[in-house]
Length: 374
Image 1: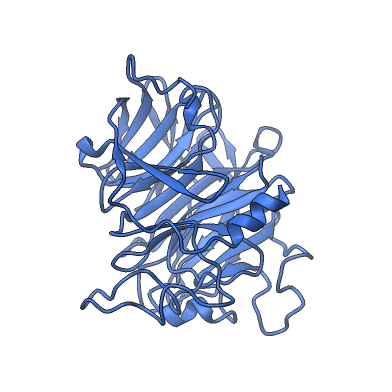
Image 2: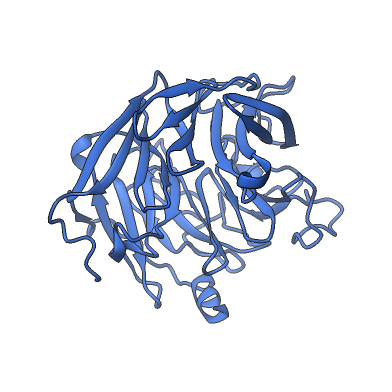
């Protein structure tokens, strides 16, 4: 295990090309339901139901067999301007016993909205005991780059991402939370073994930094590794293996270009002391969520990463072999939908939220061959 982690952490740069991506449309798609708004987060809470967050500030319990949806009460006010709003939802590892759901949202404050992690208990169609666990120090005058994805490890910790909030320098400034991945205990307290917990001038909730806008976050309980994907500027989207205390370089290094011209961002692609990405996307696909597939429905996908794509409008599958080489396959391009959120149920079925408000169920097409071992 340690060999695998250390090898990936030292990946040279890398897997940068997107031109060799395979396109495959061997999936079956069923629409479960339709929302008036963007389904930003999906949490499967049992074999039949999911909680879906809508960016503009509402959330619903959805029956995955009938599509019936019931609005939840007990939500806070959100700032849904720009890229803000009610963001991710995730069920606690102890959800069955305790009923906790975790949420991220952009909380309006006097000095601007802030990426916030909260939790509440689900009682029927009500959210009770709502409590903000961390209102991050991330306010700017911008309404973009909130990050906001949530992941849990197997040791009672919760992670969530915070974007640079449209101010690049934030990502290298550890006196605020912007441009970082945060790690907390489930009750919102700071773990004693966080990498900066003994540093007086650094926010001790920070687990990693140098991020632009990480909108995908996944903890793999099999390999005990945390992974993210994040938006680059014009090109340079990334998949990263997240290590405690590591710097991921933004805006010092990047594979992206400035929006205003063909000028590279930063000092180059790599630099000593900065972790390299496991995968770079050029041109940008605009990745917005991330899981590592674990299931029997698509058996030859086991261990592969699945990322939704907004800009190039597809489901992106990445296989990383033991040498760090990546193979990319693209699905669902024919839908021409901005794919926002993704979740997997216990049977291996996938659910995807689109910016047009749909929640889609993804299964195997007949004779697709995807169950065969590769």
